[in-house]
Amino acid sequence: MNLKQVITQIKKQIGLIAIACILMPAVAHAQTAPIPVGPVPNSRQIEWYHREIIAFFHFGMNTFANVNEGDGSASPQLFNPTALNCNQWTGVLKGAGIKTAIFVAKHADGFCNWPTAHTNYSVKNSPWKDGKGDVVREFTDACKAAGIKAAIYLGPHDRHDSRYGTPDYSDYYANQLSELLRNYGPIWEIWWDGAGADQIKSAFYDRWADTVRKLQPNCVVFGTKNSYRYADCRWMGNESGLSGDPCWSTINPVSILEEAAHITQLNHGELDGTAYVPAEVDVSIRPSWFYHEEEDAHVKSVAALWDLYFNSVGHNSVLLLNFPPDKRGLIPAIDSLRADSLRRLIDGTFKNNLAAGATIKSLHPRGGKYKPVNMVDNNESTYYATSDNATSDTITFSLGKKKTFDVLMLQEVIELGHRTTGWSVDYSSDGKNWTPIPEATGKQTIGYKWLVKFKPVTASKVRLKIISGKACLAIHTFGIYKQPSIR
Image (cartoon, rainbow, N blue to C red; front, side, top):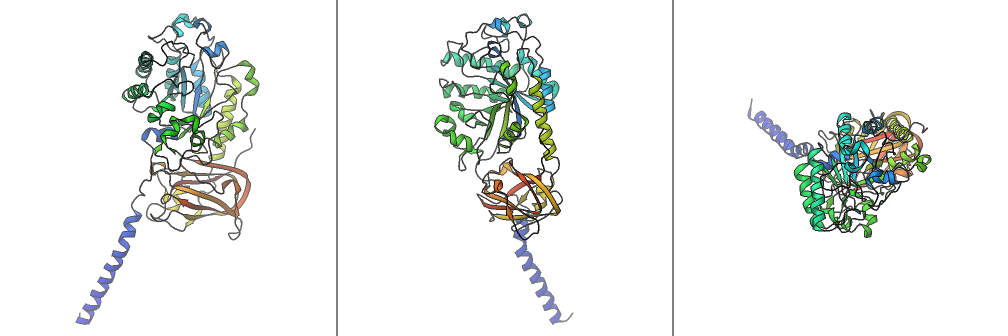
């Protein structure tokens, strides 16, 4: 090799090195995950989100006194279910695809559904099973047998106990909480209702929360008012099953503490909130929380439940749906049927993502393993991300042929925090002319899951436009679906 050839070879090598130096940062960037932004969920909240629907069971003295808010004076002799069967309750949940249930161990009337050692106002002084029964035990045993996660509502308010609001009551409640958390296996949520509980001081909750964390470290806390510091999930401001639009998981803690003045913030969350406390959406399948025979004709229809699902689970929240057992101690057949029909509708709609297999193009791909196709691979552990400086994007899904759909779904990687703050979806039959979906225009939140339903449209291309964000995109699911008919 002569000198000229050597020089030429050296120049080539220098050029390759220069190119490598230019490409190396981009390659390294493509292999690096996006950095979380703002408050992010803890492990308990991530597990809680994946429940999607939780059952609530209001059953106790109020059932037999035929009231919703007992004053604590009803005799324990009233409590006498004739056919109590918690396995029937969990059977209803299995049919409805519900994997967690919260049982009201003590409501504000103070009557205890287990034979607590700390008051005589309990099942041990009722005629049911000659005072030897324990509804909490039967509930948790049934949940264990059915593979359902058991949770407990232990009302802080107590109209029966004269010590309510005093340090002695704090001791009483702490002892009962300890009984329930020590003796009944894993408890996956504790529900601290704020209704009527204004006399419960923050210092009481400090002690009770310490008990929860020591005895049940995986237990989610539904916190309100003075328990706000320990809240893993929040009340969303109504009992109608309606989360806001938008509905951020983030909120400022003062909004939970001073709930009466911050109903809007509870319902919508706060984009720049300093705490990650998502909404749990409580609503009853009947007009009341406790069973009343006269409401048998007023169980929510399947269509109403479907709307609730979209306005709770579909609004970045978890649906807490109440099923009140009757005086027999059973879930009425009509309630069971409606819940089962809701599950069939959910499964029938979301079993087939019509965007699966689409050819996907985006303007600002991050590259590497963060591919656009990850949004339609039905795998939550993979996701699409843009480059760090791209907080907006246009993502086009070419479906291959015309398809008809009337539901869409988006899911962000919640472990990375709220990122997208503005988005919309439109569609095209020819790839040239685009029509917006009005119900999916001007949206803000995504979070764990955002659902939109609308009149059926037919298209060969669908376009997701991310208009604004706090950070680069991190979306693991985009789906379009067709609802079956509601019967």
